[in-house]
Length: 175
Length: 175
DNA sequence: GGAGTGATACTCGGATATCTGGTGTCCGAGTTTTCGCGG
DNA sequence: CCGCGAAAACTCGGACACCAGATATCCGAGTATCACTCC
Image 1 (cartoon, protein in one colour):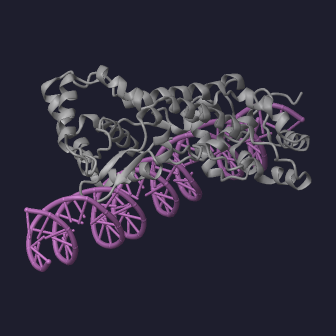
Image 2 (cartoon, chains in turn red, purple, cyan, blue):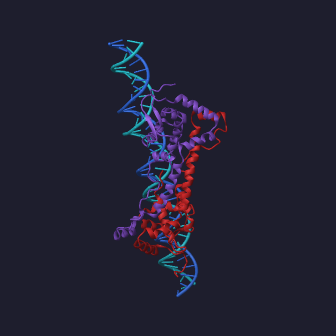
Image 3 (tube, helix red, strand yellow):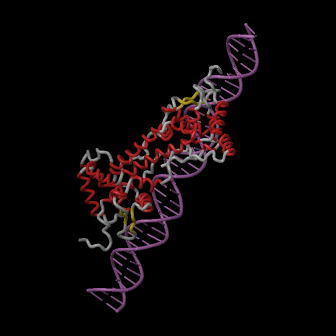
């Protein structure tokens, strides 16, 4: 059971996007450079987030990505679902219906396997708990914890970098 | 995020072993035939369970496998750990320390990354909840739910098959 | 008839091929910007 | 000087190789069984 490595990059990028000014966007190239990862591969993850409706893309020059909704409404489950897919980790192959004994039962009683597989049900219960836990971890909570976890030095440098790389909403005056 | 398909077979086999008489064993060949799966591949899973101390193996003719402890003390987490490994599904690559900005901070402040990554911490919190949920799902609970989920017909056929295929503990008298 | 002994057959165990899905990369579609031209 | 238009440049989007890990398999190590021989 492993999650795609791209998830880490995707969440980091989303955290960065949360710090953008209203309507501003950030190109994938800048995000890749900041995090020291491959731009080509990062695009793959960002596109998945875009398809899932977590972020929005703006094409063309001065384009980029931005969050599609507020950080409080984006959970880690959204990222996992977007990148890993929504299918359960435990894929029941119904092997309980395989083999000679199982086949004999199916032949005699059409309702023999109407009830769900107990093993599958148990695994899915645990997964549901996992998903609920992921749903409680919002982007906002992660951002709120950052001041306690990163140095003021990095905070300032990141802010400066963001100011230099964000693209204001098109047509908007600088103010 | 996907779990190995072998997990399903492994748990089904363990359920079957739980129905064995005290000390009796069941060979992998019989288990594979019953469940309609490849014996060679099933052996791989059973060996993993054996290494993890969930089941015991008895070599030689009239050998086989049996549970190493009571079904109440075997949880689904044990199976997942044995087959998937105990490493977290989310593997933090510490990309927060990569890139030019992060490197600059590391150079100025040796303690810059002493605190854990907030994203990693959040993902691990959810995983801990998942593992706790898996730990609550014992083999005993699954077995207890079987009478409600499978037909009496299959129950009887399975019992018959088990009686025909189990190997009593060596040297023990039949009576 | 009983015990000892060797061969045998059956079991698990680890090492070895194969193949799907994740990883990494590339080129194309679309849009904005920008430069040049004309009025 | 201003408006228009075409070319260019930059962005995201989807399609294409590559590789690690899971899947599937095989052969070897070890042991109880069984048959045979000898006492």
